[in-house]
Structure formats: structure tokens, C-alpha cells
Length: 313
Image 1 (cartoon, helix red, strand yellow):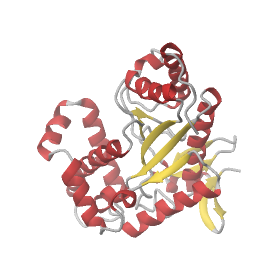
Image 2 (cartoon, helix red, strand yellow):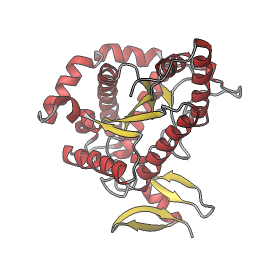
Image 3 (cartoon, helix red, strand yellow):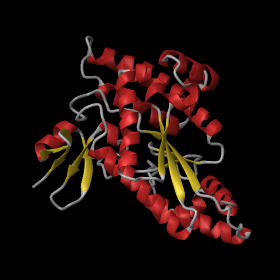
Image 4 (cartoon, helix red, strand yellow):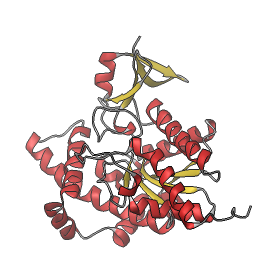
């Protein structure tokens, strides 16, 4: 089908701002400000969205994330997607549907599943990562979430061994370690990301033979590797999805090149569906919590014979 007639520049700008306004309530940031945030504070995203609007095409978003479940049993219910992912996927599809109401070509989100990129650094077997991504694809198909798709290393490098895939991506796209260390020393946002990933690595370690301080040193070292690989994955995504609007699961500064997005309610800005479980509160709302805490607050609910989430009566 040929693209619709392109609107004039002014209407494209106005419509792009309206599309971005639909995302603003879910913006994930660590910026501390009481001032209202408007679409004009995100010029990079507005330019990208406007490109799709002028072409009369669906707005394409890329979202690196949905890598695999945390390996820590106190956080999650297993290594496969559950209600936390199910709710997140529904949210993203509904957001695309909202965009479709004001921009008829609609929108789509490409979930750039990055588990294989750093699976060796976070202690998750590649077989579990494959199973997680395959289950995501099945969940999207079974739930008829046609505006979503999954993209992972298998789409780029086929059946190569995963260690070889990681090595290729790292060699081509990862920043030098010395440059990354210098950036983390001088850039507050990079430093916050480094600290957040270090904390997650510590919390995700279920068993460690050494002392707590030794674990923290080990996780600080691995955090650099995770960020290098994440940057590499971002470079690969940008090469394969050149025009897309880049979303991020991590908090992002207002006006940055990536738009941080919150998928579900959580008490911590860094909590994700794959580091937690869904709790259905007594008032009908949902939140994300570590499994051990959710188990104290609600009863376990099974779906298709597998643990799905917790619910308060």
C-alpha cells in the first residue's frame, strides 16, 4: 500500500508533539524537577517521529530489553515470561493503539531482546535466554499483539555459537574500556547507570563463594562489560533500524537521545518485569515486586499450570 499523502511541515510537527504527549506520562527519568515536561523538551524524539508522520508510515520504536529472567530465585518465578511480561506487552501494544487513533498508520515496537549480548556476564545460560525470547514471540502471537515484534542476535548472526556472536558484536560496536571508565568518572548519567547495573548484579547473585566486598568488586568489573555490550547492542540496533525512535528501559535524562519508558508501576525506577514478579493488589491495580516480597503480600496464581503472579484477596 503506498504511503498516505504527506502532511505539511507544520501539521507534521503538531501531530508529532501529540504522539509524544501520549508517551510522557510513562517517561522514566531520575531528573528531579517539579516543572512540567512538554514535548518540546524532547527535540530528538520529535524529529524522529516527524519523519514517520511526513512519510505517512507507522512510527517505529525500538526498545532494548526483555533479555531473560533474573537468575535469582528471590526475585522471579522462573526463567520464562509470566504475568509481568504479559502486562508489559499489553501496555506497549495499547500505547501503539493510542497512537493509531491520532495517526492512522499507527505505531509498532520492536523489542530488541538483549539477553544473549551479555548472558555470560549475568550468569544466565543461553538455552534459558532462547527459551525466554521464544516464549515472548509465542505470547505476542497468542495475544494477537500485532504491533509488537522481537529482534535478537539470531536475527543478525543466525546459528553461530553464542560466544562467537558476542565476540563479533563487541569487537565491532563496543566502546573501549578506558573511554567508558573516563565517561563514568565525569558523566553523572553514565555513573548512575553503572551504579544501578552494579547493584543489580550484586542482587542477582544467588550464591558467591567469597566475601561481600569481593562480590561487589566482581560486580563492578562485570558492570563495565555489561555497559560495553549494551552500547554495542545499541549500535547494532541503530544500524538495523536507522530511523526508529529509541526507547530505553532505564531512566533517561530529559532531552537525551533515548526516551526512558516505564512499563508497569514499581517502587523503584530501575525495577523491570524480568527482575521481579507482578502483584495484583486488592484494589485491582498491578505493581512489580521481588518474588520473596510479593509472596508475603499475596497468594501464588498459576496460569496454564505454571506460576504466573501473586494476588491479594
